[in-house]
Length: 110
Image (cartoon, rainbow, N blue to C red; front, side, top):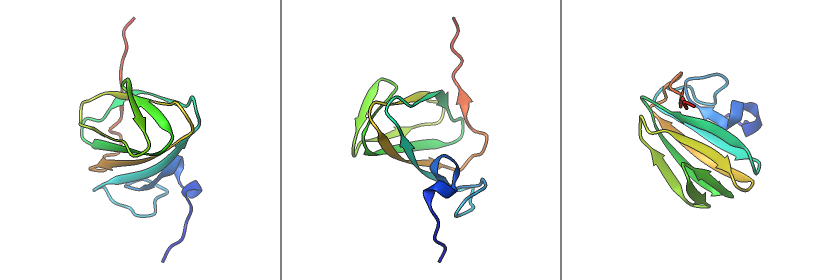
């Protein structure tokens, strides 16, 4: 057995091919993330990985879609999404396969 705490990991990512990790694999990445109301993440996509986000508690918006407790959003490779916590929010996120350096910020032209 190996007991640890989410605070031991970077941004809640505890399974994947990065350090620190509880289980080192490139098959999948798993995180439990906590956001305060108003927290935002820039629009990005993954070219390789599919990302699945589950709202455990709270309310968030991704690509103008309001997500509440129990909602699940599956984002396919190449689809851009952003994130805004509309309330204090906890998410579970699964990326598969685990693909390091597979995050591409959306370039917005003025």
